[in-house]
Picture 1 (cartoon, rainbow, N blue to C red):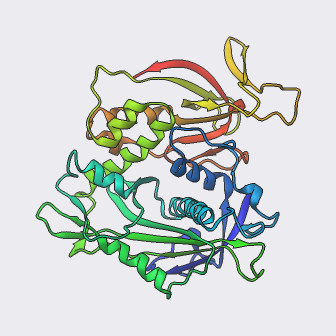
Picture 2 (spheres, helix red, strand yellow):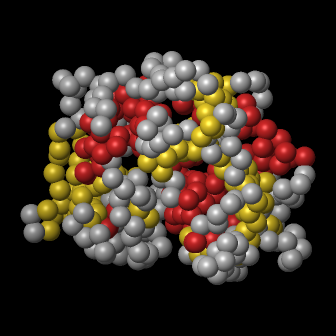
Length: 388
């Protein structure tokens, strides 16, 4: 399922081609299309920890609150019964929109919360770089990475009230980047590129002329010169490790998650055990993922044998309304490199390649460049246990 949102951009010297109305004109389009399956994939990675989400993580949980129109517009006055609930949910969804926007249009694949970077720094520095909170107050949400040598900062906002590049609120968001200082090995501040992605959500109660709108701007942290790609590698590798730490936690790999989060290498005598699954249909057939499933609301799926292999089936295949179980996993080759990264292999972060872009083939199936996949368990078959 896809929805349309309005787009406004400020201070971007070069507009990505995917955001241009005319490819040869450096000007953003008025409207862009959001795929809900990938948007919810980012929402799930950012919002949920070890506990499984409810409802099904393969189904965008906000879709039941959207009007049946081409545009992204909520029913009623939005999600939440109280102002506090609406604020919390809009902020969560704003972070998902930020991650989706940077992922789809700026090639950003890996996300780590700024607090995670500061906590990891307690264990070891980033190849001579230091990250510090300069003053009290809010800071950007994320350190992000396209790769270990291309990093940036990002601030996400989501709200139902008006957003404008000229209002005081946007000025406050810009100043958040001034509170984070990255210094090089000589102690001099270096500039890190930033992104503000603020999403204002339209509702049924709003005027039809008011649309859900993404307002994007690219501030930067203070510094005397830009951060060079070679000196950013250690910090970039940490962002990649922290990104996969959250994924390892969802995969019920707590020791792997802690090693990735802290930067303290996992001992070689601790072996990582998991189950490899294979995709049985679609354009990714025969690709292997490490993971497991969340059962549907009516109980565990049935395990059946076909041609000497296991397959999970719905609890009651005769009922068309029987909820399916949902698979979550990480592509096996990437998973193995993540384990090497957790063991302290310095080159492992750079060796983690992106999973190839996959054309849409089913609304409940999503796979990202980081190698994570979410989809109905019927698309997957457990193959064998692996030990790394």
